[in-house]
Structure formats: C-alpha cells, structure tokens
Image (cartoon, rainbow, N blue to C red):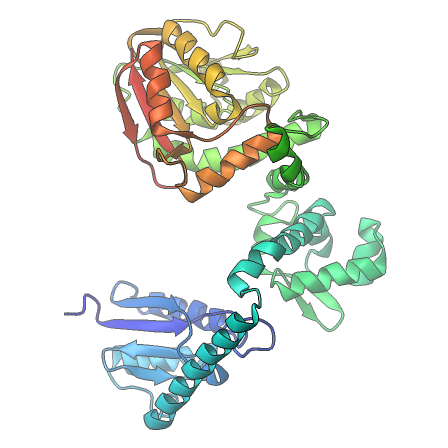
Length: 451
C-alpha cells in the first residue's frame, strides 16, 4: 500500500553538452513550482516528490510521472503545474491535454533511447574513451577555481542587482575580456544569469556571495580559496610525507579571519544541535580547547545559564573570539586564555573539556600527550568530549573524513583524520574510562571519555 496519496517522479538529470536532458529544459524550475503549489494547498505531507534520473523521453522533457496510475506529463513548464495540482492531485482527474497520449509510441521511444545509450557506452568502452564519471574528477577543479576566483574578486557584490562585463571590470579593476569570459562561465554553471549584455546574480549567489546580504558568506568562503593553493601541492606532500608549502600551515591576519569566519559558519549551525544531545548535569565549568570563534562556548552557555567557560586559543585568535562572545552578551561568563595547547598549562578544575576540530591538526604522539594533560585538568568524574571526523578502523569511510586526511597532509606537519580505535587508545592510555562513540548527523561524531 502506498504511504502517500500520490508519488511523483520528476527527471532532473543533467547530461553532457549537446545531449538533450530535462535539466537543460528547466526541470528545476518545474520542481520548485510544484513544491510551492503543494505547500499552498497543504498537500506537502500527502504527496511525495522524488527527483530522479533519466526517464527516457529526453527530447520531450521535462518529464514527470504521477502515481498511482502512472500518468506521464512531458514538455512541462512551471506555469502548467497549478492545473496539474488542482485537477489531478486535488480533484483526481489527470490533465488530458498535458499528459502523454500515445503511450505505445512513448514506450518504443524509451526502449530505443535505452538501446542507443547502451550501444554508445559499449562503443566508448571498446575504444577506451575515458568515461564521464572518471573525467569529472580530472576536470572538477576548473569549476571550483572559477567560483573561488569570482569570490576573491568580489564579482557577485559588484554585480549586485545587475551589471555588464565592462562595468564589472572597471569596478573590480580587472581585464574586460577576461572578466567577460569568467562571467559567461558563471552563467554556464548557473551561478549567474545573463539578459542581453547584463549579468545578474542567481538566488543562491545573491543570498550568500553578495556583501551585506542576509547570509553573506564571503569571508568564510575565502578560507577554501586559500586551501585551493595548498591542495595544489598534494603530489609533493605525498612524496615528502608532510606539508611542503613555504608557510607550512601558518596564516596571516586576513587568512586567520577567513578561517575563523568559516569555522563559525559551520560551528554556529552545529553547536546548538550538538550540545542539546549531551548530558550536562553537574557541568559547571567547561574548557573549550582551541575554541576559535567561541561558537560551542556560546552553545554550552546558552544551554545552561549557570555554567561558565574558559576559551583557550592562540593569541591571534582570541581577539576574534572576544568579538563573537560579546555579540551574544556572554563575556561575563567566559575566561579567555592564550597559549599553545600542546605545551602550555591548560588550567584545572574543569567538569568538561571540549575539543572540536582539534585532534586532526596533530600527530598521534601529540594527541596522546594532549589527552594525558587534559585528564589532569579535569575534576574526578569530568569528561573529555572530542568532536571530529571519526574514521572506521579501515580508514576508508566516512568519505569526507578520508579525504580530509589529505587536507591535513598539505596543511600541517603531522595532522590527519583518525579512527575510533585510535581515539580509544589515546583515551585509555591517558586513564579515561567508559569510552564511547556518539554518532552525530553530518560528517563528524563524538568520542567521550570519563575521568
């Protein structure tokens, strides 16, 4: 029995240039309008909408199939959706003039399409043509780089509500020919729109990459822009076994600000969710070790109005931490400590020591020593809680954690992603007991030990 009154499949597949597909014919706009109309008539919980791959009628797209009944709609436009919602979903009558009439011809077309695709793949395989799924790894950096360059040049802010290539180049101080090429590429990947000679921001760039926008993330985005240069040294880093950049992971003031802003974006979102899942009974004093922007300190203190915190980080970061904490009016409950966590005293008398995104910066020996020092800083019954990428013991999953190990290779002397068994060993060696893994939604998990 169907769990929903209707189940709708809409093809949104994007195929290589020159090949017809629903994405290029505006499928995303159809999906957006459908979700909008369903919400308007309060059918969101009654109709399941699933985007899917090719339905086989690529030259007639966008294509949609509505169950029960299996009614096919082809050549859809967003303006068609209100009728389909009203007549088909609400009144139970498929819209005949919009639905597929000759199902026999459609079936033959789909079969022919499938045979054509299979035949083409066989020919390509025999000829040794590099498949698309492999080629996109080889060239994926191109789209990444063009977006990061646009952010570094602040093109999206310059465009604002609309601008020509000439206007952008003058405002940004860039070459007009090169500027136009970059803007056209941004249109091609759908981050900009072009109307005549005028370029406009898409909804997503207007929201996140325009200075002063509600979700302005430009400063945070400059962090991956810096990482891009470090990742270009990966081949040499693998040969050397450590970071080979001249600055070897160091950051200037602008880079530090971008890094802390990027981390605050992530931690600010995850902090409240994560802290709510913890048992904080009896926790009066928490040490946020390497606390960065203070996003987790903020989450702890907002969760428990009686708690106080110590935020420990390097001298270059603490002034930024103080600003973020002050914005939440929590300065009177936070003590700021500067130092090197690997070598300097951490203080004592804590009920909880929180390490978020810290262990991956250090080598195994440094983490083992750090855990031992944390043990000595805790009250009896106090806990260490590590939030980080926790790999399975074979270290090939989760996917992002395994890839992130290389981010640490190109950026640090000995950092990496570590497995659950490694965290357990470090905690056990330090003297911690009742060591548990607490999975979290997303790429990171918690490792918890008790003194």
